[in-house]
Image (cartoon, rainbow, N blue to C red; front, side):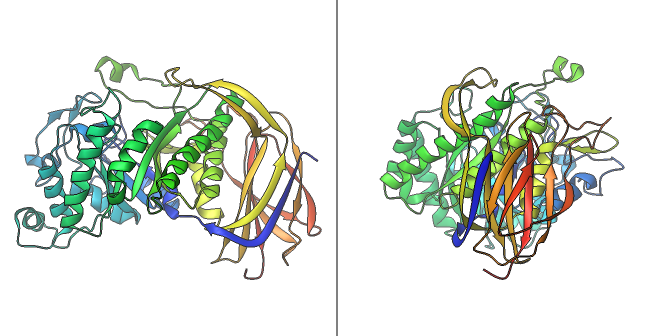
Length: 494
């Protein structure tokens, strides 16, 4: 046997829906030509791409972050409200090109309503001010006879938007960011923004900038931890090598555990972690025309190995469900996008299909689980800017999670076989349960870990559903090489 899995009846925690969140930014073709394209036969009267809307609805996006990212640090929200034809056209000096401001706050909130998601706004800590943030909060959330609430009504939106999640800045620890500052400077700004924004609307949740740097994070948590609800961490990884890419998911796990330990050390149990930017980022393919115009695209050709990395991220988030309660893939469409579009239609990448599998074929109650497999050690270097090297030991060849879907009475046993070229036999022990012997299996796989989907071959990598007979409470299950499966096992209510 290559692995052993035992699932326990005991409930081990609740998985927050928000770990399946997404992120859109005014970067390349994410907004314009991605989710929004005026005068396209594929768009509705508001400019929303109907094919993208349908794809996002299918994976039930629970929270959507906007307008950035780096773009947020130089964004002034008042440029994006009111009649579209009167909005200013400005240089997007963050990512290149012209920002038309056609897609602003009202459009974003309406888009969130259409897909049934929570909006998450990031306020500028670069060129923005506290007053500007308070005015934005008033515009979105208040029903008062005051200037900005009245302005929202004047523009045809009588009811407050009730935006709950507000990020204070973005990556201000980095010199690439407008508004770059020290940890102590940021912590004081954060304290003020959180204090006064919560005074205006006590119902909101504040997300602080974390830096994946213990010294920075401790400074922020000590100074402003009492006023915040989440601290963020951003993780981008990827390599041309299969095992380096997979192992990066377990590097992310180590970084999340380190941040969790700081929160616990300071006894800030109310503060949760938001992994509000994560993705594979390693092999940018620019378009000639766009690169000549100085526009950054960041359009990645995602493959099966990248999807298996994403599965590893979700296994980590399931294990850490007590602390990590929000995550946002960066990004949703085209720019680092799990969905690719052109003028004729769209393509769903393997990353999209991992979201489909975890959102629609796993549960939200985490079950106790023992899992054992052979492991490997690796000294890996992230291909992304060559900026990260790490040594990891005990990276599993087989990993997974067990959840319970209350609404359908299913144990959902998700298992990944990370072996590049080897099928794996796994002993699965379900002896604590009474269950049906005939089950459905959802499998994501392809002939090669480097297989991906494009407009010429849009279905090279996609989930398939199979039937399987489980002979007894302890059974041998074959996991094909480089695959993700979910066993959906009907049981009596747990």
